[in-house]
Length: 121
View 1 (cartoon, rainbow, N blue to C red):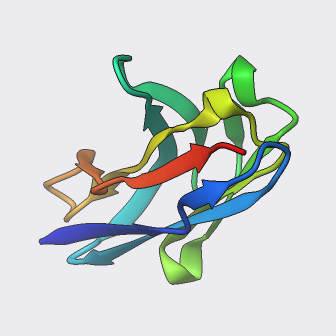
View 2: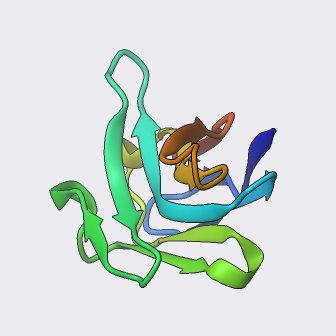
């Protein structure tokens, strides 16, 4: 059993910052790529950023230069530093992880429950 726990969402004014965290726990053999996605009301879930085990990351064009993804492998945790927030960043942010549960069960995808980020004055 694997669980992803997100934290750090909230209400923030335009131009503000937030730091989201997501920690994976449970029977993890190897934690592979981790990422953040978001879903705004009435829209499909979209990729925000992903990072592999050695720290290579990629970002959606809409967040480049404002968002930074990082991870701490010792803590099984991925972070998303969000700066210069805009109202269009309002969404539920979901953590995603690709996890090897054993040598025979590889690449199982898990999602967190989501954390709400609201940008409003």
